[in-house]
Length: 218
Length: 215
Image (cartoon, each protein chain N blue to C red):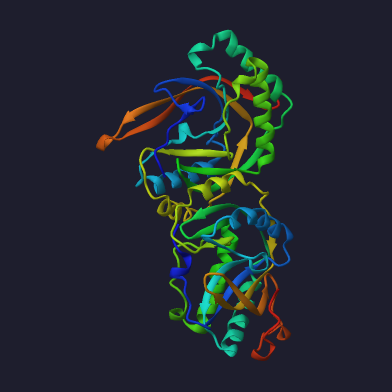
């Protein structure tokens, strides 16, 4: 396994907007993560993601001013109005080249969400602001990041023996966050805006730069 | 990944030995999405030192008759196994599991199978049937995670790029319908590969098919 943080090192103090699916109201997802916690804690080569900071990145956006962030959120509202809430299932966790991740599936609806958010965001910030579009969106969440180069065969075998039930949930919203990196530790954020799926935006649902939520999430 | 070496009685498999196994064999005329997923995985695995399992060799191991090799099990003893399996599986309802994610592992690559509950139930029944027919020495292996094998590695290689290739496959999770157990005479033979390498290759001959919920 390679060092995740070597290739993901943000300048000190930089904050980058991201579109996420969040799990703070999903106890089954928390249970799934906690079922892996004891195992992951045995490996100093890993930085486990605290349950309160679990997330599935849908689209990395980059540094945004409050006004542009609000415009991005507002652009997403009509784009997500045509996507009804959908079910996903998570798992099994597997060791990949730079961490421990369970897949999220089925991929079709969440990929539709990705392309809608990417397109809406691109219309505001320009295509050059965003990372290159992938051929195919890979939905996943991270349970741990690797902080070293190491042989993870033992971990893979142990993950294969751990078989917590795969959680299911309904995705009802996308969340635009203002994210910061605690290098070699974790990502944290404050919420900029929540955009519901399948709801036609009204005048009162506009984000506006002044309404940015500074409460974050715990 | 490292070279896969099949095991029998906690030792390397004797070349050419045949051992009775209970396998789940997918019916790809029903599970079309599974056929497409397996084909996509094979394409991702092709650059690696892996003996790919074609559609006719896809399987999920339920249990093996590990107390002896198949040549030492008489026709009457095989019939005992079949009858015991029929008895234990007669009241089991066919079920569906999810095959996926595709996972690169030390032995090649596989499709994870879940949820566990019906597979644990099935494995327990098959084990009970084998023990009923042959005694407790018949169970000697921990099969590990429920999985469908996709291929067996015959050399050392970095699994990370394979895992990256496998994760690009969509859909990555598909239905797998289970309505029967196959009792098979399974053989592994070690075949020479280029560069002085050798690979263990799987084949089987059918013994019986036991449908779930059928008396």
